[in-house]
Image (cartoon, rainbow, N blue to C red):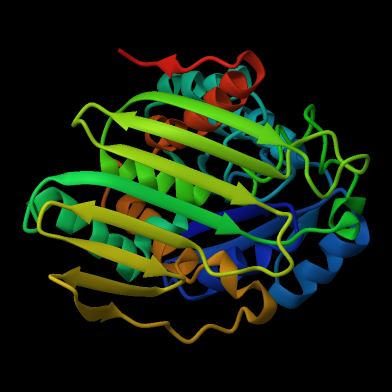
Length: 338
């Protein structure tokens, strides 16, 4: 089979999940890593036996590179993705797509202008076994109509987390707990619940006031075209990184997710459908377990020349909701998509 040449931009914390996944794909070859920190780039290149660059534009000139993974600061995602797509490289970018709606739209336009390459967006939690069951249950109607949904994220970030220059600022991070930590849960609510018809949000800075510009706490209320409703709450002001909670209430029962454990409840009888999987992420286990699964699926689509489903427009759905929660919170008005 054809071997795919890969470059990864950004050798920070999240890059390890990508690099591990790449190493487990037989048809994938890591050609280069890129980081403006030359020492970090060199160390990563030595570990993974590849070349390194400190300028991603120089890397894009390498004809051996077919795919670019973007694992950088939020404000760098869009310009890097646009340059890579125009250079004829496939792109798989970490969430969020960008730091503003306008920047994300430049990515969609670049993908449309280069249909011979694909743009994929990381939302690895869609691939979790529990997420797949929740999606299938909602689609099949086996528990009747979906009536309402709930998503809760209670995590912890202190001042030390924001010592990185770009975090905690609207111009570079694009927001706080919503765009960074809890966008995955909001994505699951829209992916499972179906087309959103309106959203209203509020935000505040409860524990990090004076430390960050952006919010550390957010609440949203969603309505769906189906008639279902959802509430969403996320905060970085809790004392620990508690398991994410999602609840789906149907006419004939409900599904309750806590972390990676999913229960079905019918007439008061609780049945465990999934249990936690072993992970080597340690303290970062709350990131989820499915980066490798999504990355492998992306390459499977490239190798078989099929369009990848979690593409730019699909990744934009949750990102657009994030941006509209911020807009609603500032204006005090509900945003409708009718």
